[in-house]
Length: 336
Length: 286
Image (cartoon, rainbow over all chains, first blue to last red):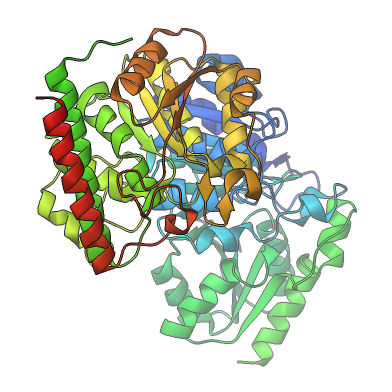
């Protein structure tokens, strides 16, 4: 059942559930952040409309910086702004930023401790028809390995808005990951959000004497959590009880919550629109190997590149839909 | 041309000589590091920290200070020696360069040492960061200026040209870039490795004001910085023609000295030569 404290969208399983791309939440978030803090600035690398910073540009033209198709320059200009009191958000596609400008981010943002917020758009395979060149499936890994970097992957546009606003307030480098395609709105403005605090979206029905035990724990981030919830619902109908944890902040990982839930479930499936190595699954595996070893399955890109197609086709073909998650849950339970 | 009082000129020349000696001593103690670039830029650094910059060594984060961004971080021995002599930290600390626990990292790290405006080392990202500084000053209507010291070799990096294109478009007149045009890089002479000329015309075509100076002539360097301050609507680049290894005869113009320190014996020879030069400076100005 949907977790009560999470105050989720009660209509999320409806056929006509409201859908919106997470990037839209980013667009609203930077405007709110800018209203609150006159030092918030936005840099765009010729992708103003598609990274949803048009509204910001219209409202705060003096704080909007167009750098052209030059992601290395965008990251390093932001690094300079960020050490001089500004709160720069850099907007581009994740394959280019933080893809092409990784070293600039490492040296001039992260090691330099500059207060830069990196917004990586069109992340994951659900970018769709643009094909594999534009589908960032390594960005969580490449950002997560950097010391001094926070990594947040919002699950819907409402959470994206909150994450963007939070990033503007938190000191230090933050990577925010957004998707192109619209996806169901899972949360509400009342859903609690704080960077670094994972929260349960789905839990086993309360029965006397069950003590909150579950058959497996699904840990996910980003819009694929919708598929995880669909899987959880279907499994519940088949008397398999899972917990679904929204681990929006991949770094720093909410280790305490993860370990506590693993102890209740005894088996884990991670779900992310990303390579299965180095991302959320990798982060969880590192933690569990140290603190609470348990069988794990990884739903994500299995060391391959994507291709053109509709988002739904791609998510199905590359094994990240509800059906694939159910299969992974069954596999992991057998390994308990 | 800027008029510099004779006593001021002597002071600057002697300071640059002291800094060169510091560099040689620092490098020999560290046992690794770059020799030619730091020695070649000693006059430019002295001109900036002892004449051009508005700064307060005892208040390194003074809000209205001019910012100096060192882009080619590998020449940091000259930055460290100059900062120490300017009063940012004690001179004896120079001998800890590159040692474990030292504030003097092999390449500069912001936050480790007072006076370091940015972390650098990987080439080609200094001008962009300086642009970020200059944009912040412009947005906040602050009068402080940003200077970025770069190497000629790092003009082979794409990031450098992205920055040059942007600063020209934005007419960032509060930004001044200095190029250490010493013609050498690790693999040889720049014009053999990857030709950069015509550098002046390239910058001009990107809407920059371009000044050529003798990087060992204080009047020349200081006059160019003053001229840059007077230019509106365009950023300025000062192409400082320098002699790599300047002041140490056996290092001058030899690219083999780009990336290595002197041995103990070589350092003795270099210091002797620099002390002789110092004597000459004093007698010339008496």
